[in-house]
Length: 250
Image 1 (cartoon, helix red, strand yellow):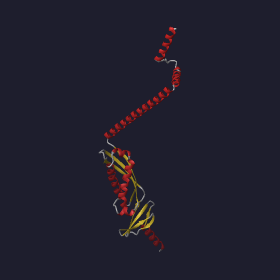
Image 2 (image 1 turned 120 degrees about the vertical axis):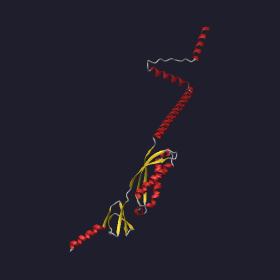
Image 3 (image 1 turned 90 degrees about the vertical axis):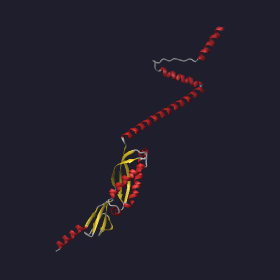
Image 4 (image 1 turned 30 degrees about the horizontal axis):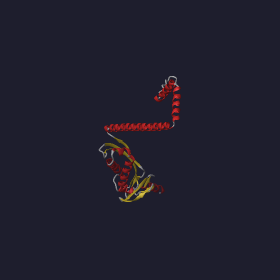
C-alpha cells in the first residue's frame, strides 16, 4: 500500500509545484482573482482553482524601430533608439495593461516623434543626450501606472536626406574657412603688434639698432653665396660731402 501512496503524493507534488526562477516573479490567481505575488522558489499552485503567471523583472532592452520625424525647422529625419526598462510592479504590469512590452514600444515611438518635433535640427544633433533624457522622463511618467520603470533611452542613429547632408557639409566647410581667415587675421595683428613694440624699443635705444644690424650681418655672412647691399642714409653722404668741401677750402 505504501508504494501507490508515494506515487500519488509524488504525482500531486509534480502537478501542484511551480518553480519561479531568480529574476522573475509569480503573479498568482485563485478562481480568476488576483491574490498576490510569489517570490523566486518552489510555489504550490492548486490545479483548476489556482493559476500563476511568471513575469520577468530584469532590465530589458527594446529596439525602437526607425521613425520618420519632422524637426521644428521642418527637416525630415529618420531616427531610431533603444529603451531600457524593467517591471517594478508585476501586479500592474499584468493586470492593468494587456501587453506591457508592446505598449512600451508604441509609447516610446510616439514620444520620440513628439520630442524631435520640438527641437531644431542643430539642437537635435548637438544635444542628443538632452533629447534622450526628455524622452526617458516622458515615457517613465506615462508608464508608471503600468508598473514599468524606464531606466534609460538612447538615440542610436539620426539619418538625414542626402540633400541635407550636402548642405550641412557645405556649411561645415564654410565655417572652417571662416575660422581659418579669423586665425590668420589674428596672427597678422599679433605680428604687427610685436613689430611695433620692437621698433619702439630699438628707436629708444640707438645702440640696440646697431647691435641688431650687426647680428643681421653675422647671419648673412654664414652663407658665402649671399650678396649684401648696404643702403647708406643720405645724411651720412652729405656729412662726407661737407667734410670734403671744408678740406678743399683750407
